[in-house]
Image 1: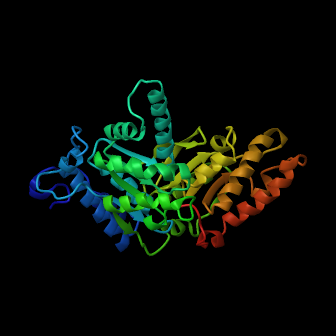
Image 2: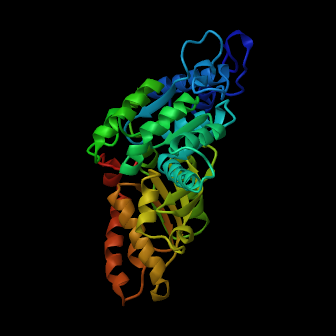
Image 3: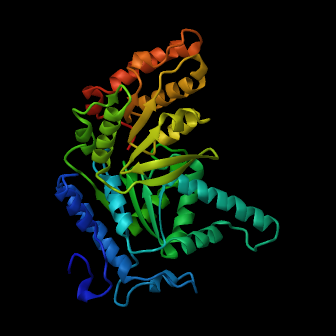
Length: 391
């Protein structure tokens, strides 16, 4: 089989994950890793299967059995890639999603997907109550609507922490898989450890067994935390502001994202939408104004911290009493990223101890903790700390 096509010269694939991966190596953006190359090969095999098979029949619940190329013995199996932080899971997911042949595809954080599902379930329940649709179970129509929209679902940082999610997953994905939806997911944990110690976990284990019948599970046991290597030795707190700091931030951004395309995302936090204008490869880049001059709270920062492993925050100004609200948000942001062990790159108008100049108000006392944490988070010891919660 050629790199750009399928067996027998049919069903051409214009780009492969392997081709994009080799291009990054050739450009010096990454180095070859045997564990990563195994995942790359698995992703390309999946893309071949997606090209070989078409959408399932909608005529019956058994349509998924026949939505396959003649002679194939099984429905298309997805992929579940898990491993420690910084091993390249998100990068490989990005490469795969960009080349996946399926037009009806969606890449989404798992929490956003489940928030969408709960909204759909609520709407269908109301429609059933009002007699607009028949039946008494909202899951089948919700699953049918999702399957109409997507054939390939890509979840980055698959994690289950909410009992409402845990209770619905088995029934929802049983139907989605029947309708031919294919799942690719990255996670920090083995599927058997999902929702560990969660409330009523016994009711959730059926979903774990179902998942393992419909995805191949691969542990990405790369040799090192490549994100840490990218940051090691680099200045993570850049001051003063100006062209030199901007150039240094741009250089770090290119290193951390491997030159992958930048995209926008919207995260949901307790019914609120948090816009993320620039992200790639698990890195999010914000201006100070985007994070601290908007009405964001601790729950919003928690949501962000669990969605990206590294943050770049640019153009942090010197603040006084007039900016106490923005200063308070900056305190909360740094506290959150510190507690969740995220990596942080900052460009600022002054050193940490010169960022807040007011001498009255609670922020003047609280900012002393922020100064200490900013200093710690730029240290080599912080980078090399393996005890991290963010992925």
